[in-house]
Image 1 (cartoon, rainbow, N blue to C red):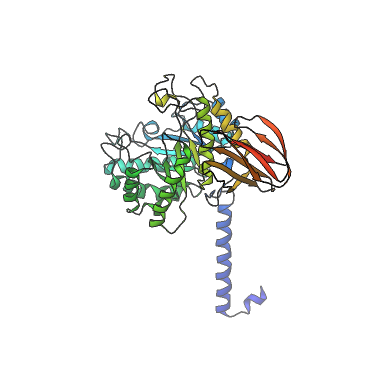
Image 2 (image 1 turned 135 degrees about the horizontal axis):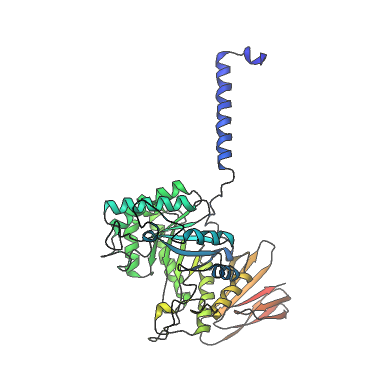
Length: 428
């Protein structure tokens, strides 16, 4: 203290300023302590962390537990504005069931993927936001929702499929939707620094939807989101999406120098028995595994399967037959497929694709932090493929798409039989 008194006034002032700065830094540190940091989409998370499923309201704790048992780590669901705000300015998250759902997701360590949607008849007549009053109301709803559930590494999606008339009436509008995103996004960023903001949940990756997306990019929408979300539904095999993803990535590079992640926010295959595109139970299970595998191979950090459970019992209704479970909650083969996929590749990351003379063959290598290797193999060919690949002599275990296991030994090369159903070679 005596030494301080002998200092010049300017020296005393400098010491005081330094002390104040240190106090400010300490206060900021203490404020941040205990907060969950944002879980980045880059670099790519381990495989099982990328697996999600769409659900509908009304699921029980038994459902959520079963989702966890399947190895699914993300759940996507709408938070309906009209369900939360039935009286202007009053937000009922408990009565609408969202508090209970969020508590269950927390209990079973499942990451929420919340869609902020749709219109509210208190403000808007149709399924869209076209008035100033509606926009203000929606922003207030978003602020209340994000404030309620912040700090959980939530994926926040702004609307769903606004490029379709079904979800933005009377017709899709680049101007109206982009304005909504630009006003909503800063609210989410401010209230939930741990949240990941995604849009536009684009329906389809084809010429028409890509033109719509291009116009959206021209509104500088990429400055307001953390990732692009798309729904790559198709009638043919999932591997055909690789070309579409590349087209999308090329478009992104035209509008941004950053590596903007692409999320597969909704994609599935229905078992409905109509037209000439129906698939059976084992084919759905196969397409499911291949969908997640090719997405991850293309560095898609989050993939959401549509959906958890059949919505009805009409075999000719497409919407009734997307589930991993039957309508009575009995598991399909797809449930076993996703459970085997997630648990077998838990903690693993994609390394490379091993090419053969046949481009229809997919042989992809995964590795975990302990140096253990897994080779996943299948073919899009209608005929099985018997091939040999060079591999250091050793032993391993082959796990089938549905979880059957058998031991295997090889010398310098390994014999693999490729079918439409992915198998996993776990190398000792």
